[in-house]
Amino acid sequence: MSGMGTAVSLAIKGTMTYTDNANTIEVRPVNWNTGSDWIYHRIRTLGSRTGEFVVNQDDTIIAGADNQYNPAVDVPFSWASAHTETNLDGASDGVSTSSATPSGLSDLATTDLVIGDTFMGNIGSLSMWAIELNQTQLKDVTS
Image (cartoon, rainbow, N blue to C red; front, top):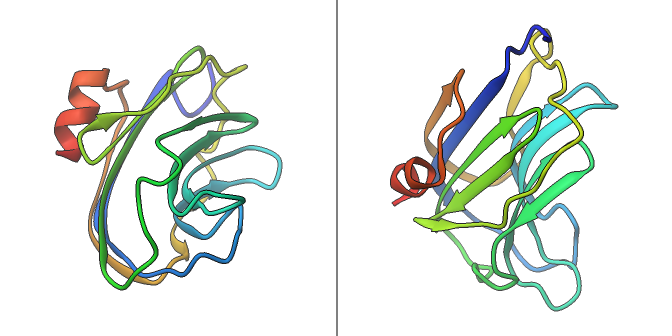
């Protein structure tokens, strides 16, 4: 077991302002990253996507709808994710994302959690739990 324990769940709510520049990382309000291991929430606008919510846990990715968000000023968002060694789940605005099986849970315990890394907007709240929230709980905290 790492210094992270066996699970971590994150939730963030606020508003974001962005334009569609066809980027893999257009918006990233949560970035927990050692350079080789990471957990982050982001908006992807690559290709035909205008605002796809994505959660990364190292090389494992889960995502919502390609065009869940449209570029604008003060776009409301509410995102959550649950991370374990064998499960990655997420929700956005009360809707579940896909789920995936990561290869493990990186030990980020001694690494700073960066808020507002690639971000313009308002962060109204950020919550963190040392447990795995289930899909119902993830949807509830983002509703």
